[in-house]
Length: 141
Image (cartoon, rainbow, N blue to C red; front, side, top):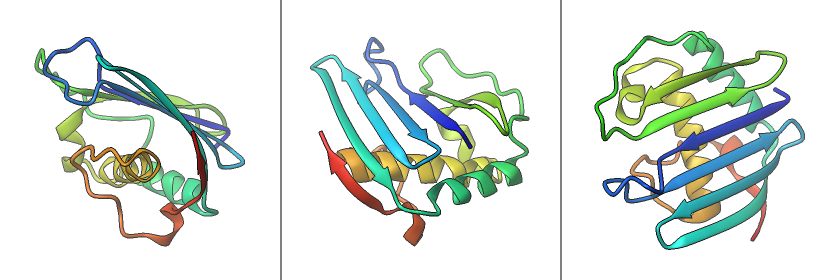
């Protein structure tokens, strides 16, 4: 994967307790993460451990990325927006809680949410996966 961009939430939605979180992971494992909330903005950089992108790619293959079921969100749903560039370019937009029912996507978003939790300390209400490849090598910010 050349570039992963994961965005969730909306800082302007009064029912969203986390605001908008944007996570970008480059092919070399470099991470940029930003959080925008009603209280302001924060930013971090980090490096994922070797294997993280391989695990993410495997989960997305299982999911059939970029194919996904068409799920109509409710008006106040938090949405997950995942975009990936080459070699498996594509994007999916899914309601927050629906992904737990989707094989492959459940694992992929658990990896991404786990990375957000490890870098920020922000509990997105999803337990980080128990896998050694999700570890952070370095965090700054």
